[in-house]
Length: 336
Ligand code: SF4
Ligand code: MG
Image 1: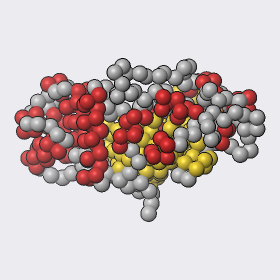
Image 2 (image 1 turned 180 degrees about the horizontal axis):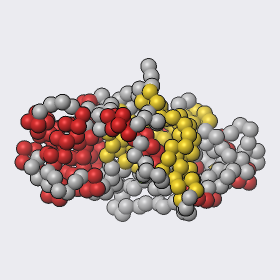
Image 3 (image 1 turned 180 degrees about the vertical axis):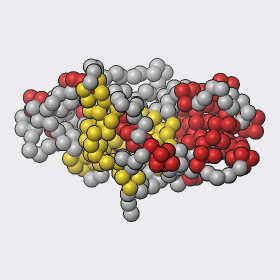
Image 4 (image 1 turned 120 degrees about the vertical axis):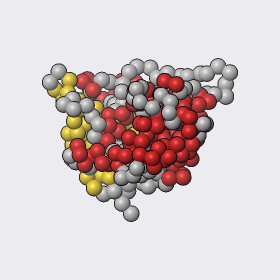
């Protein structure tokens, strides 16, 4: 069966002072029907640019797909006209963002905005659209949905607004939902509720989700597979169980140590020293993580690691696992 989404060697550039720099560099992955795929990495690693590329929502004249393909149900959608892409967005593929206030229009009621989405894609009456809006609001756990439908975004809490965004996103029963840091702006309890909601909706609607987050803890909650991105590239790819039991890439290791520990009195959050290299200063060769990697070897500056199989259902791009390299290198973990 054809995967729902295939991203093949995607390269997305951004124009800065007249020159293009790639923010996404040769990213390939697949999403199957009903699958939840997590994309994790610090900010500036290309996660959002990657999802905006899939949706063709890159800022006009600034962001541009420079290579590769995005296929949805086998069809290349990376070169579709705006009009055709508009038919896909909101209907086949929807997206939600971190801060619902930026995507909700403050001057229209919640109901009006959900109805708009429905009427945009379906030929039904306003009345039917309104009834559907109320039942959508109920389905995302909004109490007193028949009242809330006539309220304005600012009258709701952050968690409720995110629920409204989810209701809008699933209004036309998309096959794929892209959720970009959907819980980052919310407090921990609400975060957990929204993740539960997403999982429930995924099951009820047979929908696939790409969940973008900087927090591996979020990935552990609901994802089936995970892609770890660093500096515009995928550096590790595995099932969630495999990744947590057997992390390979040194960057993944550091992300694991940075997972907030809710079970401790004090929230201990290890931060990773150093910064993701800027797109304008990407090293031409070598590993992009070398300047921050606790296991870096001399070769890491001159040889570019490629994504390769390190276990079954598990790939990593690191010279420590490249048969033809590490030589005198010390493995960074027991048994590696
Ligand atoms: Fe670290 Fe080298 Fe592996 Fe890059 S290739 S992650 S620098 S050990
Ligand atoms: Mg982002």
